[in-house]
Image 1 (cartoon, rainbow, N blue to C red):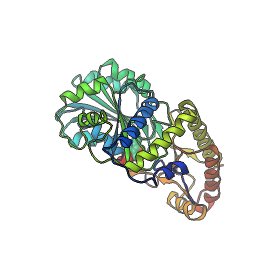
Image 2: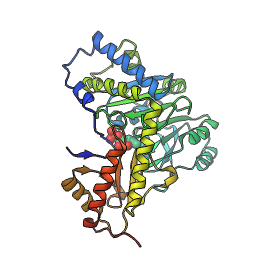
Image 3: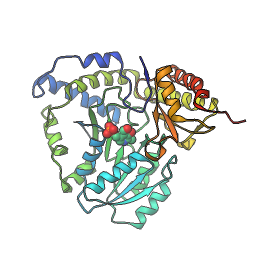
Amino acid sequence: MAQLRIPGPTPCPDDVLQAMTKQMINHRGPEFAQLLNEVTARLKQLFQTKGDVLLLTASGTGGLEAAIVNTLSPGDKVLSVSIGVFGDRFASIAETFGARVTRLNAEWGQAADAGVIRQALQAEPEIKAVLVTHNETSTGVTNDLAEISAVVKEFDKLLLVDAVSSLGSIALPVDHWHCDVTVTGSQKSWMVPPGLVMVSLNQEAWQANAKAKMPRFYWDFVKAKSYLEKGQTPWTPAISTVFALQVALDMMLKEGLDNVIARHARVAKEARDGVKSLGLSLFADEKYASNTVTAVAASGGLDIKKMLKILREEHQVVLSGGQQRLDGQIFRIGHLGWVSEDDIKKVISAIGAALPQAGFKRAG
Ligand SMILES: Cc1ncc(COP(=O)(O)O)c(C=O)c1O
């Protein structure tokens, strides 16, 4: 079987996959209510929140759209802090629904600068909300969200966080860091197939929701919450994926959140050290290098597309290339969810074998 080491979807443990083979149940019946209540309680533990956590059937992007349309009105001013493809996407969603977006774009590979965010908030007091990507999957950079949040809250703005590729593997205590809306997706750290997004909301988010006028139907958080209170979702949920999530959450809680986070830190170090030992260099500023995805820059004549093909066809190792303007410029190793240091050692050894065939010549 191929080693799937892309930054999501991630491999799933056998017990998680097995759970998905269970027969369907009535999503308006007591069995589903118990399942949803259990899953929601466990998610709250892992989000470290006393707020609400809603389970929506969607991909990560749907969760980002839900976060925007439930808290903002057309014409609202929004500050987008973008450090890559997914930050840009968050901003575009807000624009699509009529927000006036000020885009603060950092150079790709770099983290956002809290000082620059402070200046932007000082310059435009009308800004209502700040959009931030915790972990930018396209560049392999993790923002210092605690620091960013402290600045956003200095100005008392709403903080909407894309934690699609961080929550559940990189520390993100949602309440402690005052994240008002936080979005993550089942196919990333959670070791579950695609299909579900999990979104937390605190009191400030609900207050914003009460005034928000952007159009919404499928994404309506008020409906989601009122159905959750009776153990249901407003629309037919991806039941099999919820079965899978229940098992995966159990595994995560057994391992312990701190241990899960520490494992990701060790695995990421293995990836970074391994890549460097081959004479390659990291794309991301190492101070902010992500513990869920390592982006590696093309150098030494390396033909990245050729290398990815060799890895796939000869080593059964599947990695990701770069997105948009990083296509052909970087490759990315996903190491989130169900992953160990040994898995990454094997990936590094396969890369080492493929490099010469893909034109790479080590400097010096
Ligand atoms: C940080 C981040 N945000 C948003 C998304 C979008 O998620 P999806 O592809 O599930 O819509 C991704 C997916 O890779 C992501 O990594």
